[in-house]
Length: 195
Image (cartoon, rainbow, N blue to C red; front, side, top):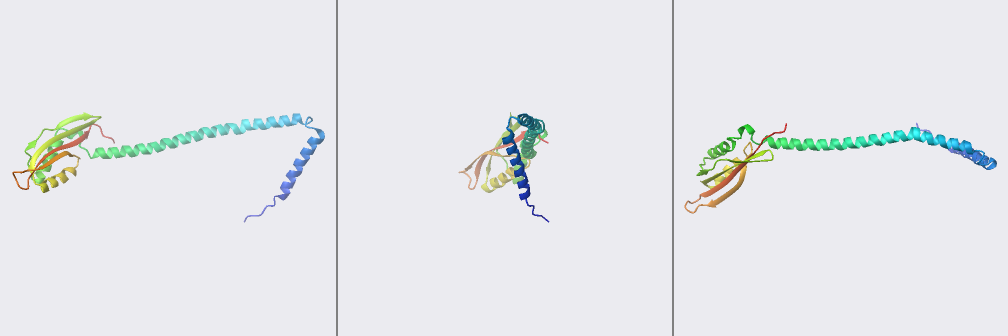
């Protein structure tokens, strides 16, 4: 239970002591107490420099180290998140061991699954850039729009990833309901993966 403390007697006591010191200095003169005041001032200065200043410097240095560690921790979390996102993206791409035949086989499988036969199927072209191998192949075929749409959905949803880089769909004038499709299918194979 909290008690009310009356501070008036303490304030009166401090006031009386200050009045005594001031009256003594007036009566005797400041010269007489100069040496004592100088020693007291020096003691206060030495106490400040010896006891307060070193911990203050150490505290500032420690706070600086804490701030640096906090910043490093934030960047480490951000780096880990970005690395995990990159690793997740790379996990959806073909493996380097499948480089030779992945794109050709995947396109052929997707065409067979939809019952489509290309008139033109160009060999896979490769280009390496920044640790990634970009593979592309072109095909051309006659197709109904519904067949093309179904094949497009299958191709774009394939795992590992591949997609249509470009598509040219034109109506064939000689066959009703048929279209001529020319498409470029691409994939990316990372030379190095992140764990």
